[in-house]
Image 1 (spheres, one colour):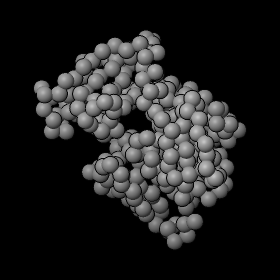
Image 2: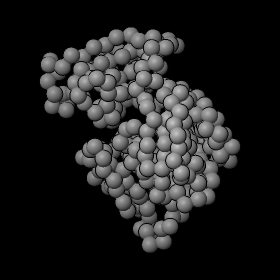
Image 3: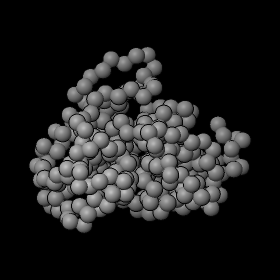
Image 4: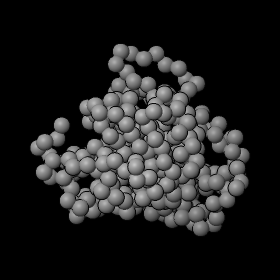
Length: 291
């Protein structure tokens, strides 16, 4: 497999997360906004003209005039790609959580919790609204001793935050082998190897001995994946568990609510930030007894 990457630079002020959601392409390995442009990345062996056409279609769907937007495609050596990621990330404070790369030391105030995440070939540094809402919710929802399942764990930032906030253990599931390697490194770097396990594959690939019903199920994904996995997410939750989903655009919310409603769950709470929605889903009978 080639170690090089293809960068698509869209020279327009756009939301990188919204582009990713609309592209709905699991092969995209990175995206960020930089100096008035959005940069998307694919490994060279997965790039083709069909993917370029998909990018153009998404831009058209956003009611943008493609002919007026410079769209640059170039090959990028892997080393340059990682250095660009590194330059894009700075320490981030989200209430009590302080998320930082290893080379940016910070002085913690009383009660603050540090999570080290080095930007590599995996999503999840806490800067995007979809992740930020989940991290805010975890600080209110973790009461201690929970078993957590993080589906599409990416960098494992949510699993690590949950455990550092008091959850007993977490299992992260991720289909991207590169992201899995990065997540496992981060778990070790944060001293959580004994409490967090990261598995490569789908929920169906999870070993039987690790299929413990979760008290809290996290899924920061995209519309299509959440719809496809809804049944599995519900089936992985214990009685009275909370399922928190994010990565949903505001206009996609009714479809997600309808899907989970058909599985017997209701949306007990929602958050909205920068056009994105996160939802907490429960079985109706568990609402009064929620702790």
